[in-house]
Length: 462
Ligand code: FAD
Ligand code: PYC
Image (cartoon, rainbow, N blue to C red; front, top):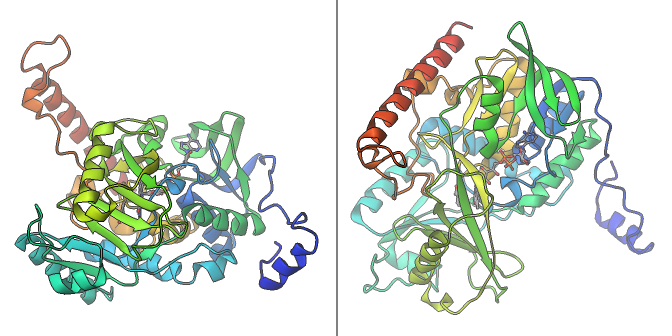
């Protein structure tokens, strides 16, 4: 791999930057690999990189149906923080944070990690109580966090409307000063380049359409370009994970939802941190280019289209203008959606599956970008050893059977459930009789419970 450096930049300027090496190869797939990773997003690429770098396993392929980083990795709003409530998640996200802090040097690629601070606003007494609890829990876990009062917030975020006559007056905020943002596509490219340099094959435009099993054990993947054999397969396909599990013959407790983001026209720098509000429900930061980067919660319906509905955009913009009236006349330039994979406890699934040699890493929902290096690091160790890394172990699919859920809906900071869900009792099949919805719902719940029980028993017996 050609190392990047100031000297290299100067040298290439002498030949008009026409002789830079390609960042990765376009290899022909081999017949068989030690490990095949399905999904070339940040998590899949990071997994491949750490497999090669930390475990010496270089006979690895990443199979991606589109282009590297084209999924949620390059569609997200790049917020990085580790201030989760429960020990299991705090340890996992803090592991990722420590890797972020040395990532550009490690990859020899500038991922533009900027620790500019992440604020979560408090608008009610209950917000303050929850935030006190979270900051205390964070500190006990070695994660930095502070609780600010309203005056401190007003001093630190000058354009935020901290007046008393707003719908939800700002009463304080938590801040994680080591939190911030990173350049999302650079993260994918940095991992891809470094993995390729260690011998990993990055195979794009190749869709995995099935899993081949022998005596119930996974022995490789069927792809749109033929069969690729593998000793172990790791699936890291975010919003497509439910579909991939179905291909493998089991079900996951995952819902796929659109999550939208939008950016404004570039304006002069006025916001030098990340500001999130759960009550008003919107968040904002400003990119180095000057665009305001804005988002809110999921679109309530399930879907696989990488776009969303207009009411959510309207709600998001209302929230931002409520927090920052000074922005009311800024024009929005672009809007898009990604497909996020939400779980009942807003925590990821990093796990063995009922199919031996087939592992899944998914369920990161609205919050997996921040975990990218940590997720790849622990998943690589799990794939290398065939046993889950201690930081990954609590995130087994088993927990939906045992009940050991890790409820992080509060720390997720972005709503992962819709407030507009139709109560099952009100649901009707189109043209069906009243009450059919309830019966249908009950039948589905019973089927789900059976599936999860079977999955749990299967795992427990291995
Ligand atoms: P992806 O990047 O989606 O990669 C999965 C890959 O799998 C895709 O490239 C896809 O093409 C590929 N794939 C799928 N099916 C197949 C198949 N059959 N064969 C081969 N390849 C396949 N998180 C944060 O921490 N902070 C944020 O600020 C934040 N903001 C967000 C804002 C938005 C609008 C969205 C949509 C998400 C946000 N997230 C955020 C969540 C974050 O983006 C994701 O959790 C994270 O990027 C997931 O990474 P990944 O590598 O697992 O998935
Ligand atoms: O997890 O912090 C987060 C986040 C912010 C926006 C989307 N996800």
